[in-house]
Image 1 (tube, rainbow, N blue to C red):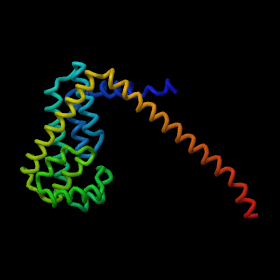
Image 2 (spheres, rainbow, N blue to C red):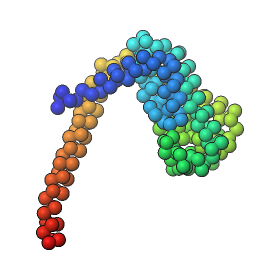
Image 3 (tube, rainbow, N blue to C red):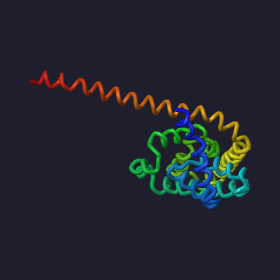
Length: 216
């Protein structure tokens, strides 16, 4: 069990090496795709980019500039899809873009209650942030206003994640110790899932002869 509970460090090393290999252009591409299809997400991208800043492979200014650039490219593409494709397209193809009708409805309600400034706030909301550019496009929001508000929000979000990633790198030994508990939790979940499947299979196997006897 102790040997298995060591998955966090290898994953972190793999991700930071990937970002380091891709460089600043990779940061821009990953944040752009996160804005359109929601993966891999700005959170892991910028956190690992910040980790690379600590390691000396990238610069803080560089990851912020390219992170914001990619984030805004993704937001602009999403806005255009919503503006020209309308809601009907998003309802048909939203699954491919990781945008479902429920998220669109929620974003639309935010627009109705809070107005355009909600775009700035939405750029600071994890996971849900990708849905709002689509909703702004569907609502035919003025693009210049959308872009300005989204830009300010993206600068705050991308900068915060990059700085957090750098600080995690500086205190990695402490973070690594705490993340070992996450390793144990993952292993425990896997073990419980295997036990559940074995028990379920055993019970279903025992029930089959009874069904056959009744049918005969």
